[in-house]
View (cartoon, rainbow, N blue to C red):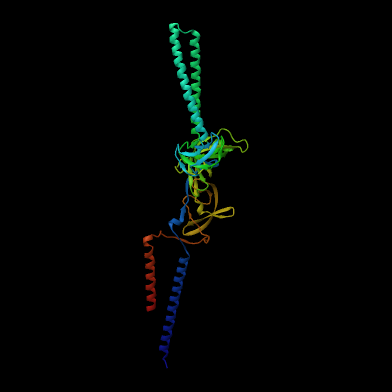
Length: 397
């Protein structure tokens, strides 16, 4: 039987052990709760954030139109003949003077030979008439020929000369007709459209090929006549071309027409490329903005916007907390794609550059440094080693 004093000591020891166990359990639960809170916090890097700042935003009339070459040629038949050969296809590059189409020249060569023979005969007749005239002049001077004979010889010489000139003209015309059986490139460029094939009958004026110079592309656009007072030659233009997604082109206004279309009330403008990036395809649709004015505004990337119906929001990161901010947007800069911010954010505010749908208003976030590719594996290994050491220590206890 235990003595009363010893029993009291044992009870005190048991109570002390229970208190220590409860305290250890509370510390463990608190540590687990802190770890869970840390795990729930969103980790963001500087690359995930966009800083709102002021930038120059250009605005002006909207211009729409098509890309067309300044140098282009519609090659048409100048004689009636049969197409023998087409040497170039659509898209083939050509040099000035290259043979593109050959027409049948049989009849024209016969005409040329006939004209050359007639010219030779007329030349002989003229030479004979000239010699006779010189003889009659000599005889007249010695009194052995009458004045009438001299005049008749001079008339025959003049008629022979006229016949010779006409024969030479017919020969030149026949040679020109022969040259027209060969359709050649008028400048360096590309065949944009072929409209004949071998065996076709080419009438005078029939379109055969189209040649364009890709280096001379320009935007032939239209603007509203209501904005014509804001447009003048030399203004910068930023535009996008259908078929070149994500690429922005720049140019300058070269000319503004002085008369508007009577039906559409639009005015034609010519815009030349200035950035050296010239598309090699004609006929593409283009749309842009003429920079007639510029102002400083707060700007925000379009990727940072969250659309909900007619409203626009951004996720602001401030003091370790995410906040969903309602924005009032202004015009969009066609050059950069950024939106002007009228209200909702201030200069220097940071927002999530590409927000996810799982973000919550009031969610905590932690800014962590950017992970370097070479050191990404080291922290993971260190964390794994620390976890293993902790597990071993717990097992030893």
